[in-house]
Amino acid sequence: MNKRVIRPYFLLLALFAGIFAAGCSVEASKATPEELNSATRSQPAKTTHGATISIDPNGPADTVRAFYKLLREKKFREAIFLTNLRPAIEGLTDAELKEFDVDFESIAGLVPAEIEINGEIVTGEKASVTAKLPADDDKMEIQEIKLRKEGDIWVILSADDDAEKRIKKEGKNYFFALRIETHEDEARQMLDRISKAEMVYALQNGGLYGDIIQLVKAGLLPDDAETADSTGYKYSVALANDKKSYSAKAEPAAYAKSGKLTFTVELNDKRQPHLTSKDYGK
Image 1 (spheres, helix red, strand yellow):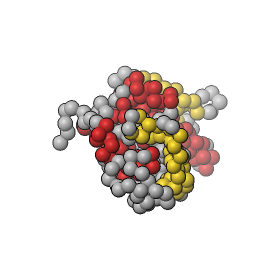
Image 2: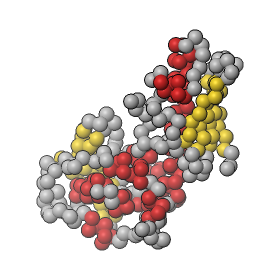
Image 3: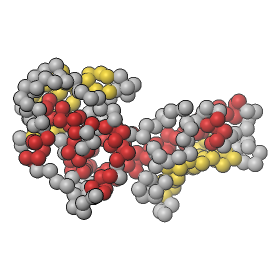
Image 4: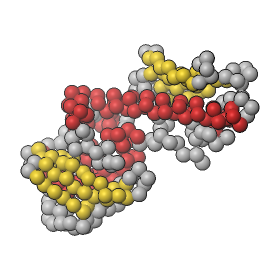
């Protein structure tokens, strides 16, 4: 089976780029500083379980350990409260948070049963922790996680300065806006892949292009190329009657939720694929 290049957990990988460097209530759940502290108190002082260093309770390394433990247990709200992404999630209702289950659960599945923490450096209100984490090639490698102290709590810096400013400005709308931007980027990438697949297919079939089913059968596209499960978009290819020309389209599966722009690829006068986009405001 072909594997989709665009991974379904792209959204959360984007959110946690600084970490993987490489019955619903109406009111949003809130976490007090005391509750945040309690999240990092599930292990006794100087614990070394799953680590190569001693870990002090409520210290930077303990916060990292607690974050991954909560993430693996799918306690997403509590986990994100330990990062500077908190303003983007603390206003979400449980029902709104559930909309991101696919993304969050994909990330949770990447977290090993035990995180090997092997370094901690504290400089005033800043700290860095090194740990073995999954990399892009699924291999474990040493990565650095940065934190800062806010009151009595160490916060993982998942978002960079620019993203953090945006998060503080947009609040809970940040997640929804980022999802749309991410899906639109993925749609562009998928259409580029379809265009390249069409070029290869035509070279192999006397200059004739193929529909999506034919491209899949030829091994040029993944089996789920038409579906919107991972990108939030639906894809289609229309062939000319003589099959010597084609157009490809990516449409949001749910307008204003999974995407706003509809993308179209058509061959220009030089027989080269040309991408355009339009917001139909459905």
